Image (cartoon, rainbow, N blue to C red; front, side, top):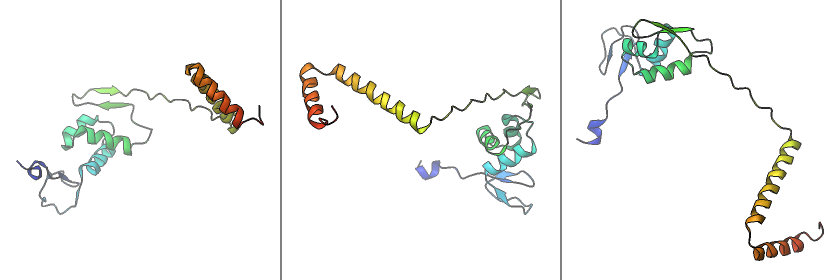
Length: 146
């Protein structure tokens, strides 16, 4: 089997009659890709679970889930009805409090402290000979500041 034979053509869904197939139906209404069909189905049935909508439409439940996340506002329904007909509460979203952004001065100060901590760590890991070479370089390079 060649790679071309393994590829399945995209299935299209008729918006009017709901037919899912590769060929055209006789109703004369245009076809849409599964993602658009999923978005339409979620908008019409927000109270149904993703799997219930998937079973009714023939679109994979993962496509329904992506469509729900992309199209539904934060005001989702409180309960969704599953394939078994039972209504279940949706888990509450936990909002994470945004951290306050530091001022530029605080950020610079923190950056300098991080550099200092790293330099101390590097110096601690150097051999005595390497440390002496480093200090000689510092004295030569920054003699006006020392």
